[in-house]
Image 1 (cartoon, one colour):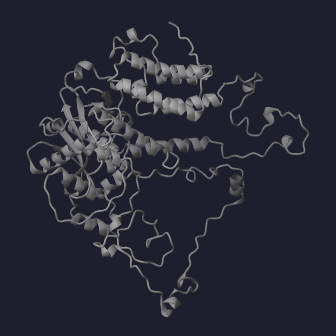
Image 2: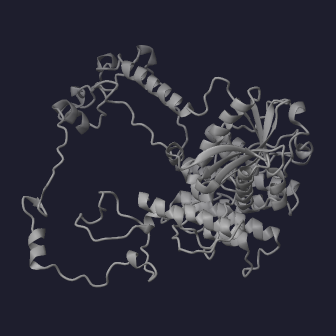
Image 3: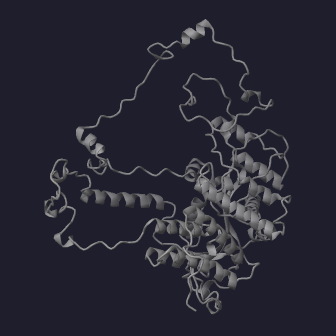
Length: 580
């Protein structure tokens, strides 16, 4: 785990869980020789991601002219249409003249043509720049160089002859490096006040608001590509026009690839439905890399988001958030009176929708939407309400300006830049047992201190030692596990009316978190018993063939593994008795 990092380890865990689910659904969990397109694609996602090299303009122009080959493997579909960004290793393109039409293999080839790093097509030539730098002074390119005999321009010569005497004379340094004057960067000088403050570990922020202004947030790649025209966001519906048919077909293929558990015929029927509307992210040649399919109900004041997906390779660029912003702006422009969105999110997509302003709390009257949207088993219904005064295409700039204004006000009243000399009474060589009146401490009154704040009462110990920290870490790991989604909050009695008739001692992770924060756990046994109670309740209420029962088994096994990691053991083999 230390070699790949925690985030990569968690991502691979999600992919492994999804693999088990697909194999279990097909009844081949123990058939290690079994494989299909979905299984192979998920296994490819277990490979470590290699960052692509920067692309050149020449490669971009050549990439538009060279078709992809059908003998390349298909892209890996995501474990869920909005799961965490899944990265893939760098691939290279092979030149081919096979133009197959409208097949899924061609779509996979086109995806790979778009997603491969264009910088891999550059011709490497020996230069006189320093090691580790390219001609433009940037970072060295990553990835393997092509060694195929078909691409001789990419292969360095096997033997390089030694330089001649004239060449050695030209290479001899004169007044610099290789005949060029060496340029030395001169750093700005700092005054004594800044040096002394840096030496004491205090931030230099008293030069005014301008000097302490935070650096601007880096613009996401999705907005950079949108601004440069690499991608476009277009609205499309089934109006029987050739352009619309091409884009809708691309959306259908994308949804089918990113939603492997959804019936392919069902996706095609909804995408081509004349009542459905779509918003697509397209590249050159109407190549669809993201999209949203929704069904508006203008007379009811809401819209149902049916499908939402982006290509796996582009999820790290921020396509999902950018598409949702454009979707909200498009709805406001097209349907001014429509203020609500409803959608059924799978367990991997709840976090994404929450970031986009969706909530599990449905405030829209049930009579408005009940019977109009389709219920999906295993999904979570979520709602988003738009704000009338928010411009969803420029909300990032607005919030950045508001944040800067707040920080400027804080700097006007902040005294954190003032550094006082240490108290001489506690300097080395002074007698021990000396007391100082708080009123004589420089800067204490200016910070807002008053004599009424002084107290001699002993501080009550919080009891948060190493054991408490270990319980916090274990609870955090359990909550973030991919199988923990059924146990995050208490069971809703309205959705499951007979649950509390069967389960007399309910428990969930939010309740455990509250008890842990308020120091209600006297020992580790009480904490572990509550966690075990969650799994026992789930197995009592749910049959063995349900997804909830399987999640409880996986999570219990994971908890026992993490207990060994954090050194949490029961002090007694006898469980504490629960009240009947």
